Length: 373
Image (spheres, one colour):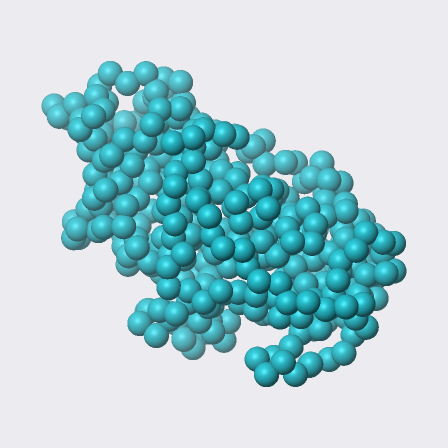
């Protein structure tokens, strides 16, 4: 194990069962005035141009081979100021390449956007938050806990030229009424980005009026680079219980698939989609609400402590308990309708200083679910 940048590095590889994603046709990226940037042409599987924007030159960039993935956090905090404040963050995006999307699960499709952004400039994730409040959606727990997002992005650095992508969030309410043109104008003139990376199914602007083709055209007009990539496809799509009637569901890796896999308790599949093992975090400040039976190696916490989405109720073997700067401890986890139960033979939960000094407890799930509770 190595410790660096607030995250512990664990050498594991989860490149299982997925077709690689590639940029199919890009404009060149050069450090010239904005007017010299050309937009990308999207091509179909037969390499036929769907439209012909002006091109300086073109190339096909291949995804980097996965390296060792750092996945275990060394210290955690649930403070909201762990994220850059939007007003500060947006000024820092200037000159960078921003990946566009809703980065809930931070899955391998999202990672691919960051990889391609890193090949042409400094990579950023530009996501929009607060959509549930705007549209009146029922709140639901995130796939990735807020306190864990920086560590996940750190784990992407080996794929991104040893550069850790940074994440900046914009309140959706501040951009929801922008037309596609106004949105790209904001990226160019207000945020000062040099280029954007988006998936082939990306929609943007008021009522999702703009598509990838429109994004390319407008970026060319405003003098910033546009890089459109194919979706990362899930080769297991034919055996998964996904709503195939959803027009947005074409077999690509998605946050919806991650949520479905967690709901089924299929942790091996979750690991494949995420490119890492799923980590669950609980708020445990001052031990309040934690219980321990006569078995000093067992701890229970109510689900109200959860900071992100748990897997299906059941028993899970080969998990790891994440205790700050300490090495991960092997544990067994059971999830029922009301509580999370952890059994760790090497930990005395009755005499553990960690809970007095930390705000969160992390559990990394193995790939074996034994049975239902």
